[in-house]
Image 1 (tube, one colour):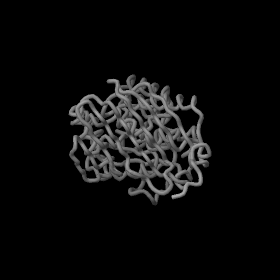
Image 2 (cartoon, rainbow, N blue to C red):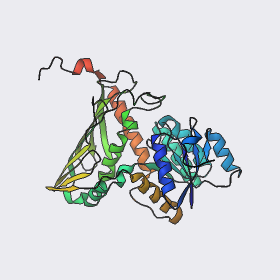
Image 3 (cartoon, rainbow, N blue to C red):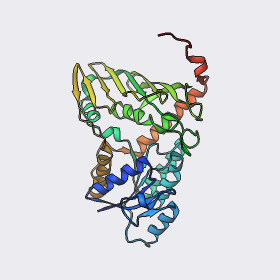
Length: 337
């Protein structure tokens, strides 16, 4: 039985808790959140308000349980210190993305992980979608990618940013860290590392945040292909489906649908059942590795996650050399339809 603690009991933390309890080979032994109400929890006598106190209790054998895995599902800016403490205590970690907000911090976590021989996993559940896995297995059929185009057009309204950390540059980091790192990782998972990253950011609608709401990223693949990624959280009333279109030397495919459940490959359309429980697949793959040393290649390791942080830093550094454009300079007014 794998004893698991979850730190952070927001929307994502609750999903992790449910998956842990539903897996017959994992047990939820602790939940930590400074704002937690014990009446919310599905189990009694497992809640903590203070992370340091929880860690001290388990490390000094004052608890009847040991910790085999800690899930860090806290706001982005808290990841580094919490993951570091887990590694120094020799406890494996599943961290929510982004692993950290700075590449230097991620590199330090790699050093501690290697020194203590303790694994870090980072939660990128898109890699576990059946449509993505099907594409991954068939990616050679389209040859070398020549053109990659990803569109991620989301709605994040003022209610979403009614938070102590979302929309703040030093806590959230921006949409590329908080939302669209998933899609950057997906591109690299399918086609390998990218290079020559540059782009620009825009502020169309979110004047109540410190970060951009839209961005354009240009890059090259290792084989000389070109790529473009457009993201926004400024859709006014709804989110649209994410789409990934790839033109290769031998064929093409397009992954689309609100839940990436549609795959068009070389002229054929494949529709997959919508699965919103792929967090459970991530958990089970980690359990298999920790219990049986079986590595599922869909898991994201700390080196891949750190590469993502470096790429996002390169993008944001590039965007600083471009004028940050706002709605006044970009929107054509008084359009008549």
